[in-house]
Length: 386
Figure 1 (cartoon, rainbow, N blue to C red):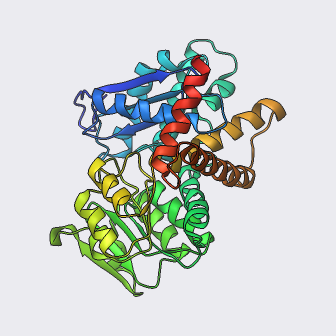
Figure 2 (figure 1 turned 180 degrees about the vertical axis):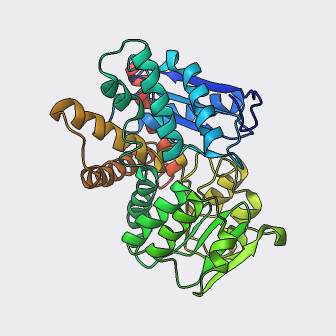
């Protein structure tokens, strides 16, 4: 691809199609400078297990590139997406694979990728460009909030079933300020919960009384124009305090909350963070980002009795929504509305939670959602193979 100065740039891209045992491949795309073949393989396996927890007949894949969108112009991101799509298109043709949004791949990037794919299809004489594009991109444009909304629904069910607590009124710690964090916060607000933190590369913000939906909308607009949470806090007069990254510490250790929702990337919440959450009387942790907690952090949660929801069970919301979107498109010839997808998503995430809980109970690990998710997902794939 070519940068704004006319220089040729090269990045490495990947699409790991891990398993099609249950059906066609489906999985996220992420752009991040630390992406590698090994990390995408690991995430492809995780995606395969995650997809198997849904009711849809789909396999697992994962992809992305070490392209860093930070400080890139819209034109540069568009040209990179066009180059990436040109290379990956032969691997995903004829409804053999489908994309989902992931780290640094949001509505803008998906739009660029979709436009590039449509151009490739037309150049190859494909008659029904819309049908092919709808399958490849699913509900990513119509319902980009699917993953975040699903995380909130899973947490709502888990808190009620395992801790006999309503999520309404509970203080929620969130990391990140991208679509995943914002959509999770939005649905938590709708459910009556109180999101009190968000973060980005400049630091994190804390609102003691809880963010309002107007705050989330303002942050979304700010992020569209590449602003920071430091800018947001500086321009608001409410009880919003900014903690710069230069001061050290994290959301998890400095602010008290009832539930933690790590929403950035794998391994962001470490053993020190886990210990701090337990000491601050946090009741539960739900991984919104894929494998957001390190292995040792997960051990801390299990040893000290915190309710823990692993990412494979907590964040398949986009998969559930896309499955429903494509099912309605196939059977009724129309696109499902956002309200229809949201209603179906709540039912689907409750079912995932209940199936995971039942698997844990069946193998004498009551309340262990991590074990239940691993068992339920693997057994569905294994039984299909037999």
